[in-house]
Image 1 (cartoon, rainbow, N blue to C red):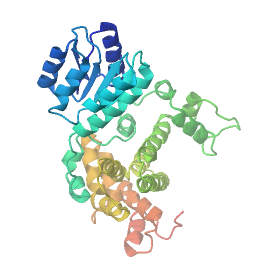
Image 2: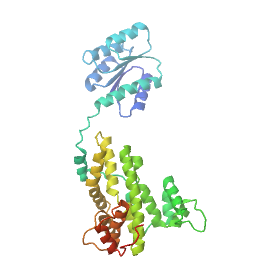
Image 3: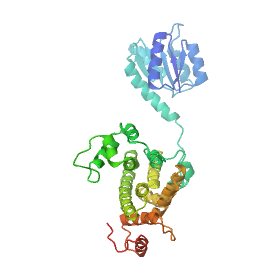
Image 4: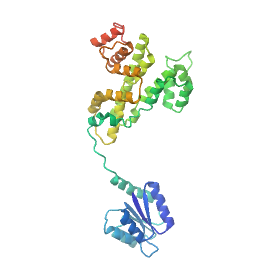
Length: 382
């Protein structure tokens, strides 16, 4: 954006530049001391705003530049800045096409406020038109494009990596990493003080004791659950509500899977983690739908549900591949979403059973078949 400043007083010119750069550092200020210089710069650059003084040292005045500009351009804003403020000067300026008149010495703050409105209006006029978005179904169907860059999920990837590392972080490492996170600190202290971990009647009141109480793996899983909650990043109320519901459901699935894993004496930590990550693809989709809306797209609640149903698992698989998740987790994800007919491994069957229980899909023969495979037929479903 070019702004032409015709002012022969170097101090006044520097002050005008300071005001302009304070509004937008990307402005290209064209400086002229004479009418001839101002005219040449206007012809060469076609500035979007002109500031000019009334009186110039070479006996010309800024009004000559105004007349020249208005002969070919009726729209470019021209602001006259002058030590003269008598009625005839102001009227003459207006009659020749001056947009606004400021008297010297001017207040930089007041002038800045007025210049801001001109610059913002011009920036909006110059902004390239946003390309029209395709229908949301087509936009989301292009998974490769939507994964560049991939949706951010509040540090979820980093925590999953730590959970699956051959050498997990130490208690001290986690405490140092999380000491500035109030949300994680509060959650871990609350969990540590719950009936599951509280010992000897002594309350935990700091982060490092909370991690020690529950262990590194459970602490990471609690941080994982917290990272998946995307409600603060979703300004659309329906998207935020869907995120809340998905996360609440995931925590129930994780707890149910952990209980079943303990009964069957299989890897409890992996079962719990897989349960927490059950809605991973849906949560990525919710972020992308918010991005679609932010770019001017339109989306109704029915379309949100349809996209989650059709594409949630595809995005889940895309993130699994992108994050290079271990096969043990991938198998659990697949079983939770749809158990293969021939699958009999208890660590996978129990994931399907956990999802069925949380979703209330327990009144069918397939559920009973899976219970039988786990040796739990006839047992209570708590």
